[in-house]
Image 1 (cartoon, rainbow, N blue to C red):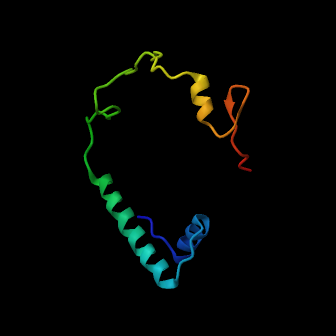
Image 2 (image 1 turned 30 degrees about the vertical axis):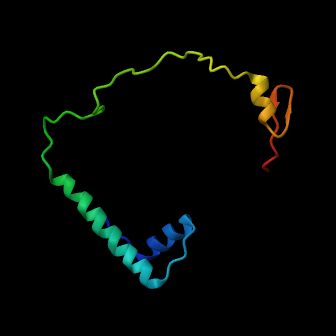
Length: 96
């Protein structure tokens, strides 16, 4: 079973952009060890003859055809509601 060291927890915290106190790191290490131990119990299950489940809803190739619904509102009417537009498009401020 995998055991996490405090240096592993520190490394994970750094990668995640977290700052942990020593007690928080120890608590997280203990919690992760427990979770991994619990998941490790799955190795004890006898799954011989059990087929993998890939789809639990029995839905296959579900799709709807695209259709245009005329709701009576035109492009020009919608563009008139925008604060600024040009060439049939809504102008927005640059983000970057």
